[in-house]
Length: 454
Ligand code: LLP
Image (cartoon, rainbow, N blue to C red):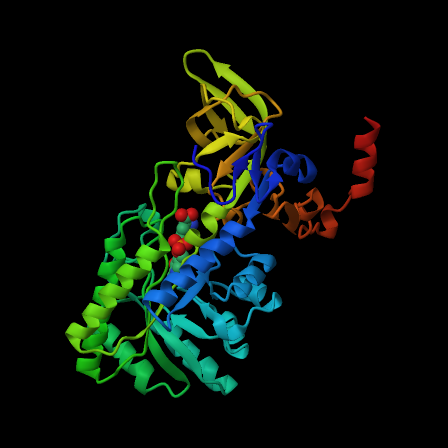
């Protein structure tokens, strides 16, 4: 087992994160519980800023909010002076309400609606990353109607296939995202944006090749293709673009033996590639942006569960069932993700039993970890699953009407709730019963009273 961030094990054999005993956190806040190691998150944000500031002065690190976005996370990202990438009106709203400076917000997405675009233009956010021709025309119309000038990047698919799960590859030509690199239609769209759209200001290009990418060469290749394309745009259209956003995608440690590259190595390879490609093509070095999501919050998150049923099927396997599952972490069923875990209340004990950790949803596929060695597991133990900071809460659902877990930050021995646990009442908050069906409806108070009487 590899400890992440500020994790340690105390003399009672309990797992501590941010100086807080996770067993106590589980009892205090209930489970499942998302725990965010605030120091680890801030540390990653700082590593990114330092690395990119050092290797590529003037560059910008943009946190990809799709990985994890809550109001408090927006505040932390702002305090760490990162910019923010949002992909929907909902994410934009969250950021604006959390008072994130609009000029540091980038808006992505392959099908932004007219109202989402209008919201972005009205709030004068930093850049809109335009994905396709339809959006480009729509944005010009909206900006003209609002009398605004909008700074944009155009999203390009560079034609690179990365070595990651097919669902999270995005740089290949056959993709729903972006303009394919170098085609006549793309060149025409770029010229149109730069020269024929009075309310649009084309600042540069964007690409994103995929997520959980461990091989830095893919990023180098993308940078090389994109700089080459910028040179083609200069040569054929006479346009010198100022900005190049290379997207996110750096992988993290899920299993103990994963060795993800550090932000420092990532910044170095991008800097080297961009510098040498630009000098070869006699192009001024553009302003570089990157958009890491997972590699900032992923390893800072741990999910705590309480073990319930433990079931042995002799000569087959031992199932350990926990009180969450695919509802709070859909990544195992979606991408066959492999997670590492420990028993938070027996963290110093030798792992001796091979078990499979199952969730509580009515699906055989709701398995969180297939085959993991743990100390002997008993009902009531607290299971801590590591590296759940990214794409867990943000992809959580209420399947089987399970309320979504609470989230706390831990920092220097102090824990604070940043997302409340959903209640049963939250689950039906938006339900409506048309009058023709309204014959007998119990109030929440009646339900609670009759449950208490039993
Ligand atoms: N920029 C763009 C345009 C993106 O589409 C993404 C991720 C990022 C940045 C951030 O990528 P990151 O640094 O987090 O890898 N739900 C999947 C991941 C989907 C990623 C979508 N785009 C998962 O759980 O693996």
